[in-house]
Length: 120
Image 1 (tube, rainbow, N blue to C red):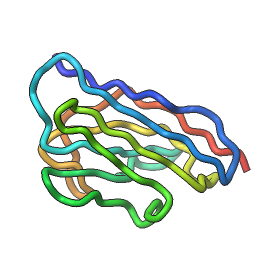
Image 2 (image 1 turned 90 degrees about the vertical axis):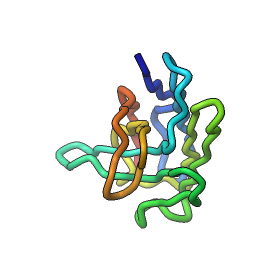
Image 3 (image 1 turned 45 degrees about the vertical axis):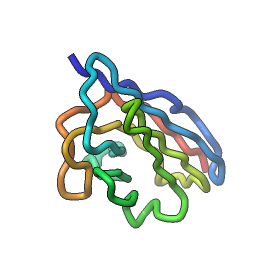
Image 4 (image 1 turned 135 degrees about the vertical axis):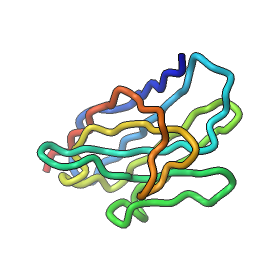
């Protein structure tokens, strides 16, 4: 059974940085796409960033220029470097993997989520 396990969440002051990592385990299957979503209290889950196939990384406008996604396809891992964090980045961040991870289509596999809290 495939599992996605996130790490790296925590509490940070506004303007600070954090790095999230996600590793897939339980299968030798290689995902075509991996990325991140987030869900703030009282809001719907939203796409943050993703890498699908050989495409360039793509980002939500709200994080563009501040977040950087990277992926190791051979190892089935994905990371999210988050800089210049804002209070509005506070959310539970979910690793996602599957055929596509975009603003309009999520993959079929989800991590358990990791909390990011940015204090202002």
